[in-house]
Amino acid sequence: MKTLVTGGAGLIGSHIVERLLERGDEVRVVDSLSPPCHAAEIVPGWMPSDVEFIHASVCDKEAMTRALQGVDAVFHLAATQGLLPEFSQFWQVNSAGTALLYELIVENSLPVRKIVVSSSQAVYGEGCYRCPTHGAVYPGARPLAQLEAGEWEHLCSQCGARLEPQATPESDVRPATMYAQSKYSQETIGFHLGETYRVPTVCLRYAITQGPRQSLTNAYSGVCSLFATRIASGSRPVIYEDGRQTRDYVSVSDVAKANLFVMDHPEADFEVFNVGTGNSVTVLNLVAEIGRQLGQTVEPEVVGEFRLGDIRHFSPDVSKLAALGWRAKDGLDETVRRYVEWFVTQGDVPDRFPEAEAIMRRQGVIRPVATRTEKAG
Ligand SMILES: NC(=O)c1ccc[n+]([C@@H]2O[C@H](COP(=O)([O-])OP(=O)(O)OC[C@H]3O[C@@H](n4cnc5c(N)ncnc54)[C@H](O)[C@@H]3O)[C@@H](O)[C@H]2O)c1
Ligand SMILES: [Zn+2]
Image (cartoon, rainbow, N blue to C red):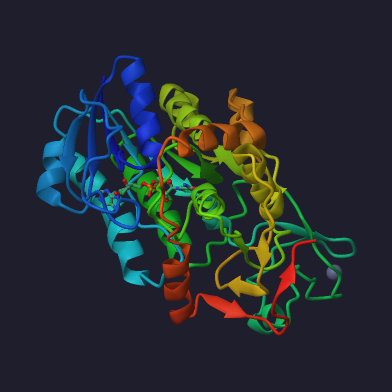
């Protein structure tokens, strides 16, 4: 097998590369080594020497033509991500990059046997909730006035009751942000072109993925790196809203395994799957676990601010992939343990949070509420 991994110098891609090499595949990587994931355009030290590395963008037609030569299978991970207002870039890289992949396969009649496209839980928007009186509800983004008043929970638009978050199945797609819409477009492009030109395609929607090799330079995402660098530099991790928002933190090792699983199972073809643990925890739980594993008592700073575009709670329904025989193995403690084990070998890592925070504040991503500073309870 010759396998192409786009974005193979990143968090998830690098773990897929490692597993492919372990099982004897020949591996080619296309990666632009883009900021903010990579500070300098240098191939990371962990990139195995037996990988054929092409330093290029997935939007570069000539480079992608070379990259696809002799390839049996593709894991497509390269993407522009984040909360910054790079609206057009999400479409240029994520959507156009995916379309180009299929375009070259069709144009050159390449015998690619399967493509696994990396999507995201972002396609669900706020996800699925339940009102005790009105049943299933799919709320839109919380109104700005509500957030500015420091009311964090979703409320029923009919009766005002607090909504209870539910596990969200694959069918409940409601992409909101430009990032989310571009990730969903990668799925529709992949399924449409894959079906039309008979290139089996699978889309995976990852929960919040954590683990070794998470970028230490990207101060906009990668919550373990954000909190760990802050704690290690003696500063208090900054928490938006009240810290009680919940997320499903899945280990990168499990996400890489899920990629290989769907690649190897024809039953997965032309299907989309959630990839997560199915157990969401609060952001405060995560910070406490990182502090515990770093051997430090951490007092997070709940600053009474919020970030535009953040969702309140999310929990994926992971039963569809479980029905095919795959489940995540790592719980929060194991996921954080592996991350911290790697983090402490990375030397002095500068805390890039203040700079990123200043940019997000200038761009209106971080917004204040009436109450200013309070401690996490
Ligand atoms: N990490 C998560 O929590 C998460 C959650 C949901 C979905 N995803 C998706 O998983 C995929 C991989 O994410 P990750 O966490 O490994 O991110 P990452 O930032 O660690 O890696 C992404 C890699 O893609 C490369 N890249 C960016 N633009 C490129 C381009 N134009 N051409 C070629 N390479 C390019 C970057 O240089 C980087 O090495 C992405 O598609 C992302 O949308 C990630
Ligand atoms: Zn109601």
